[in-house]
Length: 465
Image (cartoon, rainbow, N blue to C red; front, top):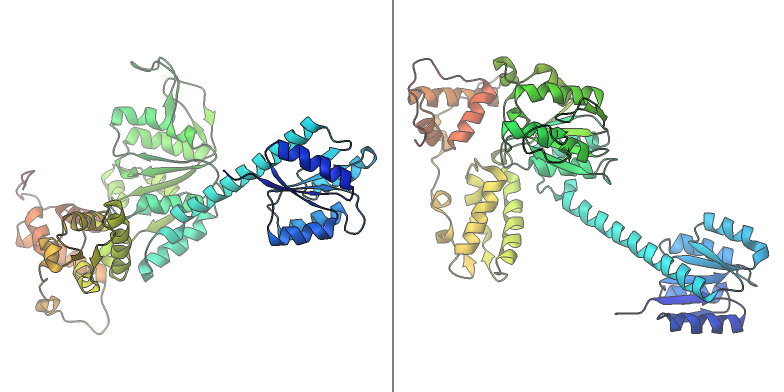
């Protein structure tokens, strides 16, 4: 392990020698300079880990040296040495950026303590900065891959919304990266140094969701053997991401509404409200407006959540982003699977772009992993692709669409296609989905989106159909 290298600056040659000897005995590598100008020359060649400088020196003083270092080397810790009568000047120097000061004659133990504390402090500062930089890289908006217009429009709105504390509602299909977007919003907000806590409202049994969300006190129910902080309390002063908010039971919707309105929560079994400061980001793949009409989602909660609504586009609407996503996942997965020599021809990319990816980015990543694991040679060929990527899609012009001069609504066309496909198969969702080359889940999502209801008298589909 390399020894930290220190620079001692003092016009007193005997004091420089004493300090150098003591610090080297402590395990440091030490350079010395007789004045501030010599120190700047040494620092310019190779900056040390710490500078220990006298305050009063002929020529460039310790204060002037400090000023110069703060501009050129703001991360370099500086410890000042001063006589007892000039302590006030040392305090002023600390306000100007010095880490600490030592009074002459310098005590050996105090010297070791101050230098050790300074190095540790700046080491931690550097670690935090490095961690923050890695988090920015991992969770920043730039980590959301793609440059298509639909995606960039959402990211621009999300970046502006991140600067506020307003609640955000992300509407998107499963697998599009809702949580990734929520994390990017948090890590670009004023709350970035506070917790980002997630809870999936659809993955926790109804009877446990309230306790997970709000916490409980000891003895509040069978099995509550101790006090427990809920996700809301854990997110205090930070951000709480409520994934699949459409799955939240009605009785909890009331409590969540009160929490958002008043900034107070009540743990299960407690009557004393607890004040919290939380920024809420919610997400759902469901049509909450249709659920409001059905009476399964509260309208007042919807408007509290959707102060800033974001519509994250599905992958089929981002075909221009698919080559970039394929390359990203391919490079990542081949390293993970220990196949760095594996190559993929760009000629295969149109196969990925032509497929509709009903499972969105998650499905694309899983398919690429399957291809990498099962590839026979050192280059992926057409034969290595799954059957559904090898099949040629029928031409669109077979529909013989007439485009009216006054224009048309793309959503209207999609709704009409869905309705006709369902009519063609007497409401059978599985058959209609297969006909449209989408999954049944994607079909149901679109039916909810456009408010398409099954007609009375339609046959019930078997669960496994």
